[in-house]
Length: 310
Image 1 (tube, rainbow, N blue to C red):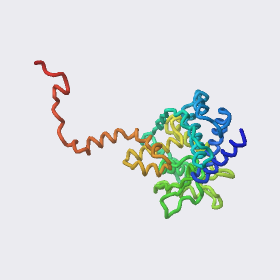
Image 2: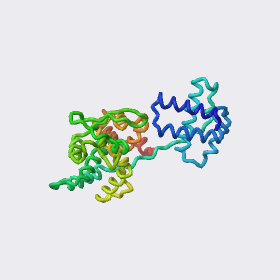
Image 3: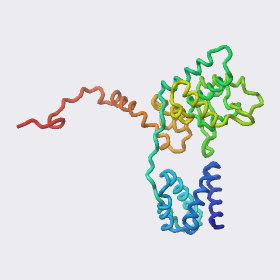
Image 4: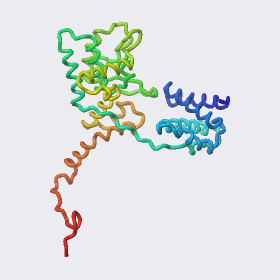
């Protein structure tokens, strides 16, 4: 990589961090994608439209999502160079634009989620519940009750939940802060678990010298699924986050409010959940539309069937 490219990439990433709050992982991904593209076109600083146009062939074996990510990094990079007067033109129009289809999220029914809480309740309905069951109760209540990401959940500070405050203020992806409501059930579950967390622990879910790992959380959730007779491959912490969003939307939640609670930067990310709401929308039209109370029209033979013979 040329010194010019290295310097320009550094300046671009400094802007992304300072002005857009890009996370460390995002910055590393941008650097990798930009450096890789630079090697393919023989340098980014002087790359032509034709050179960038050939990247589509070089990326032909990659998944559409990977191509879209790499192209997005280059568009942002050349947009920055143009805005800063570091390049007179922007060749990124030649980059491929793969058609993306978001995969539908895995769905758990409310009955399946209820089975988790039924089993946990049975384990806690003893004189001296096991600490690991109290911890599991707090974890699942927060996962399904608040839609937290796995990393956000396991890294919660010990004093994240205040007795007089039914919400959390979290810093999620991209350093964006959001307010997350916490249910009364979750607060009770966390309070019961806290009696087993040392006062000197900085974490709500400590483990060794740090906090509970994401991998361990995955294992706990899959073990719970297996215990209630649900295939473990269908369940993960992220699936419970999906369930939180899906069931809220089915219950009438506003899409914008859901976007805020989930911490999505783009409403398009949240809209993936609207596919599960089609039945409720049909029922809404049939029950609330002004025409819903009118009797069905009489079928007309020229419209609804063959015209009568002369």
